[in-house]
Length: 140
Image (cartoon, rainbow, N blue to C red; front, side):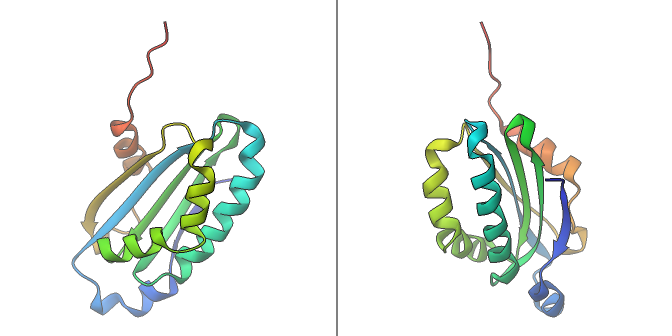
């Protein structure tokens, strides 16, 4: 699964004039514990992508996959925290996160704000922010 490039939601185009000057960005790194969960995770990710595209307050998203490393990255933009919270609590996202809770190793979620005209956010910026919050693993 290659990186799926940034796609603006239909609502983002129609609401451009009513959006705040600053919007919320969510970046995540999701590391699966087992390779055998990858197909099921990709299927779930596709359903969640459809959910984002239809969610009130969603402005756009991109997905990045590193299946050989069992690592998946998400990047999305939201009108505000309330819109993001409503999405997180809705199906299928809520059920998927519950189902994968024990199948993920140290998931990382980071939010920050950007001027709305700075969308889409560059992956290099997102990865730096996400990686900057990860706790390093020290191997003995």
